[in-house]
Length: 104
Image (cartoon, rainbow, N blue to C red; front, side):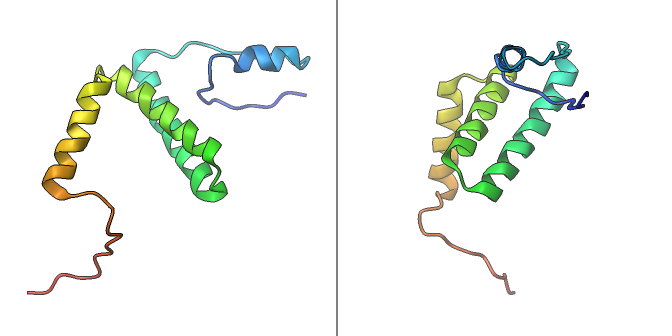
């Protein structure tokens, strides 16, 4: 019996599948495909976290974000700097503010 996936997986997943006695069929994504699959994977991992509220899912979100950052050629320092700049300009989420409306 075969099961179809068409999804980006971590590097060791094919070996884990093979160790279980099944045969993984994989291919390497082109740059354009990889970018699209990373975005799809990010959505998947965020949805899993929102559904399960499991810290492992949150770690998966972070792993995909780090890979997107690297793929886009952004250094960890540049991303940290931009995060801090946005926090300085617009604040963080510490106050838990919900914007309900804006009136004239």
